[in-house]
Length: 384
Image (cartoon, rainbow, N blue to C red; front, side):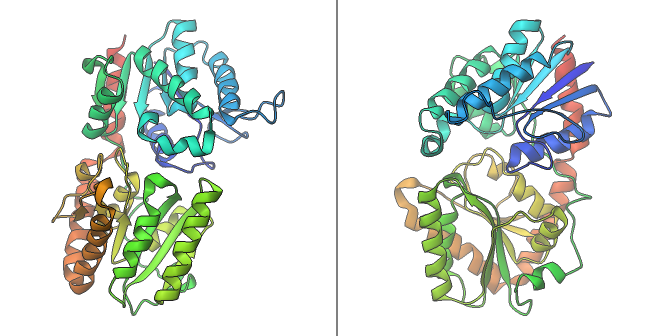
């Protein structure tokens, strides 16, 4: 079976959960199908990369560059038996390949554009283009993979015209050999963390979706002994950067042990950061599943997270971590709940360790990439 995985992100250019998903799924699929991986950007091993910037209109809205890359990607799909696209960036390439070559198109729903209206701050009118591209692809797809049951419900809510029978829930996974407890502490200590005191950590982008500003306000109520280590990528917009920088400055003025790392760290270093944390914090306001929670759990670390989207399908409240209700109308209660969750674990480190051990067991037993690749391959075969 000749399968094409269509994606914007592929290592080393990975900035979100969809890119992580494609990376690890591709490793397993190569053992099961004749796989061609098509991505956007610079040349790299393991994939055919199509330029994302079209020199014919250098100052155009980024959405037009994506569509141009999609056309080039479509041309490269000739001869494939199944195309499988990830995120709106590659959805249109999959849709066009379906029409042009009469092959099945599978879409994986990592997130939904209608659920992320703040992206208009980044893309301007391009957000309307991204919404159109996603909607067109979903309505035309032969199968839609939802990474959680919550995501499946969101697809039907956003696109009620979609036949529910075409939606298949296949979770994201975790490589529990790569993400495992790490005994070394040199990276953590090198970042300035005092290991005689507990610390909590966040790993992710600074985007409204990830709720970083809520975390920073909640941290004002953390136990004074708790340090905060943020591995936070670049902000989506200048306005969000200004708001986040101000919140970080306010937090650093109010307490000691606030460390912010802005550059991307190697996975091995992130593994060490996760392992030795009292808890991993996931204050997302929208999260179809949340691979980073799985990464923390695989490192035997407790999780304090918002109870949104697919997170409750990963983090079991009172077993692998603490879930906090998120209600947009009562942000103060949400932030207070995050603080209370951290303080509960700070007061009972043994509880945090029990949650971490249970999280490791759950990650290994339920979210294995091999089983996920088997389900994905079976889906391809069912499409004829």
